Amino acid sequence: MNYVPGTASLIDDIDKKHLVLLRDGRTLIGYLRSIDQFANLVFHQTVERIHVGKKFGDIPRGIFIVRGENVVLLGEIDVDKPCDTLLQQVSIEEILEEQRLQQQAKQETEKVKMQVLKDRGLSIPKADNLDEY
Amino acid sequence: MLLTLALPCRCVFQLFYSFFKSLVGKDVVVELKNDLRLGYLNIKLTDISVTDPEKYPHMLSVKNCFIRGSVVRYVQLPADEVDTQLLQDAARKEAMQQKQ
Image 1 (cartoon, rainbow over the protein chains, first blue to last red):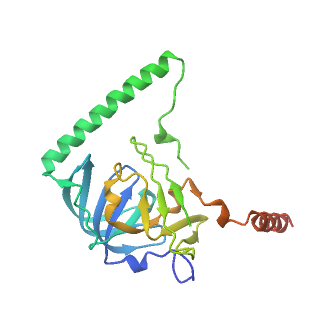
Image 2: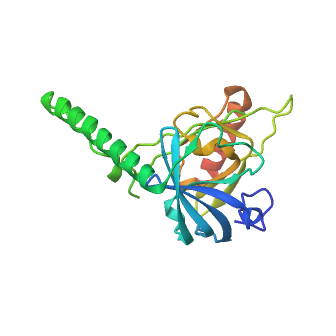
Image 3: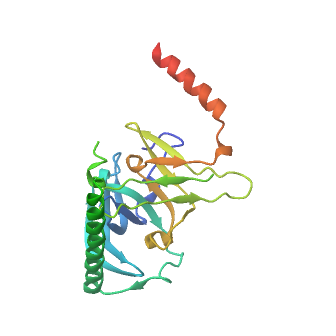
């Protein structure tokens, strides 16, 4: 990952505040403390941020070790750039409730969609299993 | 250099992310570093902007990011940036070498 000129390295990102997107859709924000060649990451003072619409909530998680295969992307958070202008921070209970409602609504539409497809004799497999390698 | 990345995601939400790299002046600032590791290309993007800011609010304060190669489905580049003739010849040569 490093010591070869022109390669992408995470070494320079150490000790900086980062946002990591995981494959299961979760967002973690914390200080990147350690890396390795598989993009396994160690986060310090981690916070799990849940976004629902224009609201978001932070759940403090402490120290996190993320296995590289679950990482989608890792982005450095620019502390100078204003980010909270459009978003409204709410309490943990509230955001969890909002998330639950959002999941419910999604599941309902999914069910309706599946039913419609079934009626037409089509079935689309869920993307969960498609990317196994 | 315009760059669009579509990322597959094993989550139920079927997230789709697109990022564009802005062109800085006349020079194409290729801040794209591809790292060949275990056959996968990790990508580092600088100066990103998201096409769908409504759907992905977390990216508002992120300017630079690192993308794990294994999640990239494809990379879309502007046609004028790529010399297809050169690429074709190089690929052909590579294939010939491999055969030998």
